[in-house]
Amino acid sequence: MRASGGRAALFLLLAGFHLGCSPTVDLATALQVHDVSTGWFDAGIVNGQNKLVPQITFTLKNTSTVSLAVLQANALFHRVTEKDEWGSGFVTAADSKGLAPGSTTPALTIRSPRGYTGSEQSREEMLHNSHFVDAEVELFAKYGSAQWKRIGGYPITRRLIVK
Image 1 (tube, one colour):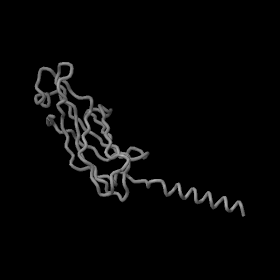
Image 2 (spheres, one colour; image 1 turned 90 degrees about the vertical axis):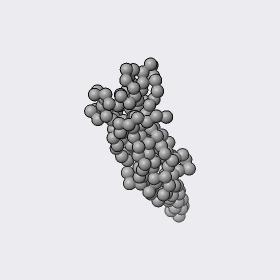
Image 3 (cartoon, helix red, strand yellow; image 1 turned 90 degrees about the horizontal axis):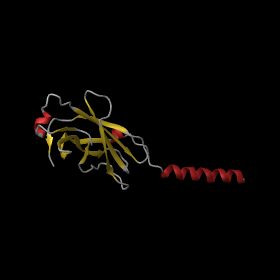
Image 4 (cartoon, helix red, strand yellow; image 1 turned 45 degrees about the vertical axis):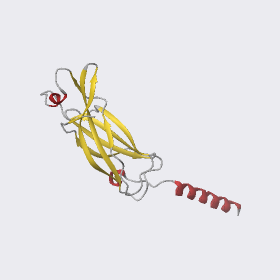
């Protein structure tokens, strides 16, 4: 009888661990990206040159039935002529309290640290330079200890964003 009591205790212990774990949510369907705006942020003068960096601003809506704790977003920027990452940025979208079902984050902005510099042209002229190469951004999200999941891809619009 002692062996069966031990199995029962083990079963209850495992059941308790299972109930304590948060459910797995597919962020590709559980998050909606809204209010997307992209452009080239005026990063000011760096080393005596005008600098423009790609930027994306967006909100995330939780369409799942569970709260998404420690929700993070990552943006990978790349030039349209290249496959490799050109720059990236990261933001915490929701802390340990989580993003409740049906809730939307405040506006989130991610900028690449890399961009274009020029000293002879204005920032607006830089956007129309014949050597200017357009960029794109891929958005990824994760919550808790889940893996990163791609949630969207967007072109960077050729428009100047000032502070």
